[in-house]
Figure 1 (cartoon, rainbow, N blue to C red):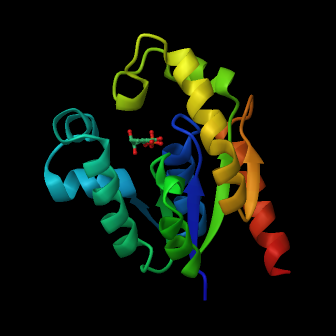
Figure 2: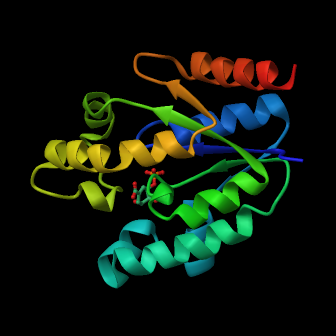
Length: 172
Ligand code: S3P
């Protein structure tokens, strides 16, 4: 039985906040791929990117997904780049329904413009970088998704309700 709900989407899409509220409502546990990496290494995501590089981070992310994807009854809050490796998605789908939180690049920029904890956006032109990454990844998110929920201009409660409605429709 697929009892996990897997949240994917770009940085700033609201995956972590949605995961917490959804978990409370559905009485499931939250597990975050980034938090598991931080726990395992004792380092922040930003430090891993700066000191060891993105390739090393992606290897850690892959190992982490292999482990957490096999749990049951969890809301899995995935880092935005989890779709870059299709093995991650295949594993997550074994026990989970994948929900894509779709957010426009404009809204992502507004939400993250004063953030410092997203190493991939630590560039001179974060707006351009968001547009480029979004263009590269959009198709991957869409392909992985069992459901897509548009989050622009919606409250957390509205987003969680839409996910619940999708889950109810799917069961009945
Ligand atoms: C990343 C997203 C981040 C984190 C890392 C890389 C990405 O997670 O995993 O900085 O490649 O999109 P959030 O999506 O939770 O910000």
